[in-house]
Length: 477
Ligand code: ADP
Ligand code: ASP
Ligand code: MG
Image (cartoon, rainbow, N blue to C red; front, side, top):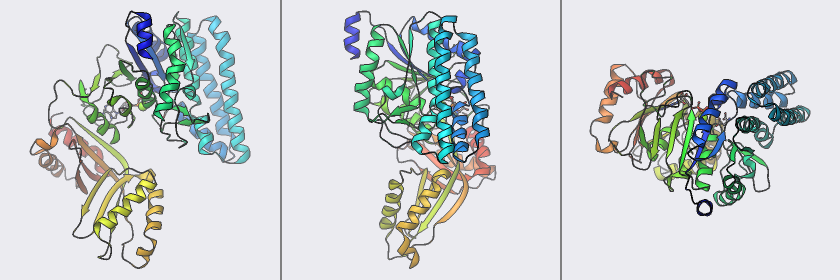
């Protein structure tokens, strides 16, 4: 499709997908900055814009749905006022008079939709995952309506597009997975005409729809993923993810203020970092663009002249060793042991089957085959489901004491050192553990990632910040 457009237009303009996160869209001033960035880049490239909800809006929507389902009307009625006020304020400040006339009734309709949904949840005292997805992603519908209208007010051709018309997903509400073939066909069909007519599509991030048209979401922080799904569908030249930091850094800057920007990292490093908690990217972001080798840039909308971080298959200065430290807090360490009647492979097979049935990923896994002991860390949010599932799977064995009860160490954190070819660099683990030892931090479990580009260790959650700082300093990051 992209080739068709290119041949029909002769002048080859690159296609760049630009995604803006919530903080980049926090208020009228921020939105104006976004419009300036887009206007400037539209001179050089065809743009496809993906937007998150305005900062804090998704949290507010989730809270409203929950409170409504408990029969509490006060909270969501208050949120209704606040949502209307924040979006209205942007419309008042940044839209031309003619755009205001068209957009204010649309914002009012969206607020009516919010009210109808919350009243419904209050009435039935329940919010289904399906209802939650429709409500929690309403912020993206509102922000895309506004951003498209702001661009039009500045003389650009732009149209708000609901991703429920583009991204087809399975029905795993709350954390849906895209069906790529259907998505590619739909996105190309819907967006190619806009590109041909030089119209900038402003697409809602975070949401999609099942093939029956039911609204789904891609998981919290999922707008990054929306951007790369669409980039792959349209064979875009690049993806630019605009956020509130200068790029991917050597550590979470909230934990380590001295953290430095990484000018270039590999897809594999980005996947590892995002899987292990670097919030700057949704964990699935890289997956759609990896095979097509579409570069992803992380840039700061508060500091657009900074080049940011480029994420590619093979960075030009592919250095070995530790590049960044990341961490996952709110994890639990589960230990299971079996007597000789159940071999270690049998124990492990059944544990992992249980995790697969619950669609839960482990953060680290360690074993002692001799003692038939298996330990693994998971996100605390997954714990109730995992516990229930494993107790069911091993119900009889636990009754007969062939398998020990699930031992749980709560409130741990997993700290991960990430870098290509770490395995080939001697002394990394030793140096890291030395640094932790000097700080008096006890290591609960250690694992080297089988991808060979991460080494992770579990510590008490209360030691996490000190552990990240100690390792960051040890490797002079
Ligand atoms: P957005 O709203 O733009 O999607 P997010 O809040 O989801 O932004 O992600 C950006 C945040 O990710 C940063 O403000 C930073 O605090 C956090 N972060 C965590 N780890 C890292 C890291 N290694 N590099 C950069 N930012 C990180
Ligand atoms: N607005 C959604 C969230 O807060 C999606 C995103 O920001 O990427 O989770
Ligand atoms: Mg984000």
